[in-house]
Amino acid sequence: MTDFSAERNDGMDLEREVADLVAKLLASGELPYRPELVRFRPKARYYSRSRETEVDFENVLEVYVRDNFGKDDAQPTHVVIFECKDHKRDLEVKLMDELVGRLAGGYGFSIKAYMVTRNGCQSGTVATARNNGIGLIKLMPKDKVQYFAHLQTYDSLERSRREFP
Image 1 (cartoon, one colour):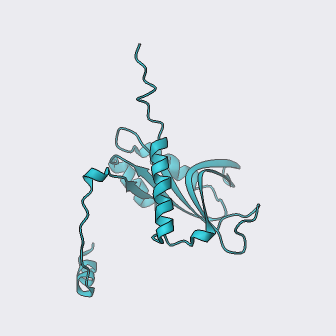
Image 2 (image 1 turned 60 degrees about the vertical axis):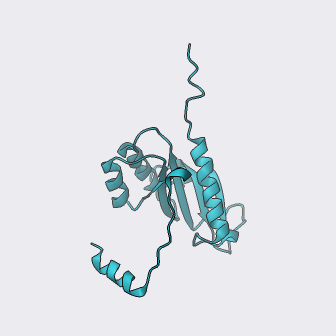
Image 3 (image 1 turned 90 degrees about the vertical axis):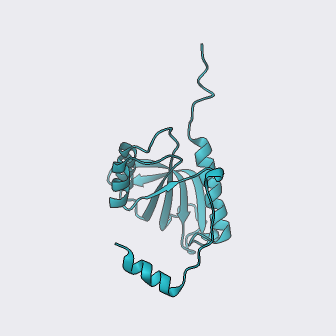
């Protein structure tokens, strides 16, 4: 009998990688949030007024205002969600639909959501994400990424803006 438990992907590696990446971006100042006013939570639950129950999210960056940070009953003013899907196939539209449903809960704070994957996305997934303001992030293996320097001048930025559809 074959043991498939070693081959099973529970997504925890991708979630840890995203958590590490968010921590690095926050520490380097590349995210537009003050590190002393945010809290990263691997798992979070928020009460949804529309569902009248709590809804689970993963890899959540909670942003607070100075007046309520650190208080036990403090609610964030903004939440950034990094929903991780580490499947061996393109990201299916039903997973995006499920996230859209969870986001429409009336939580009492603003939310920005990203779906993170190592693979591609079905065309319906991209359209659903775009139409609902959800970002798509594809993490690439380091050996598949090539870095290059690109100089932007005021003229080239203006030209790009005019050429953008």
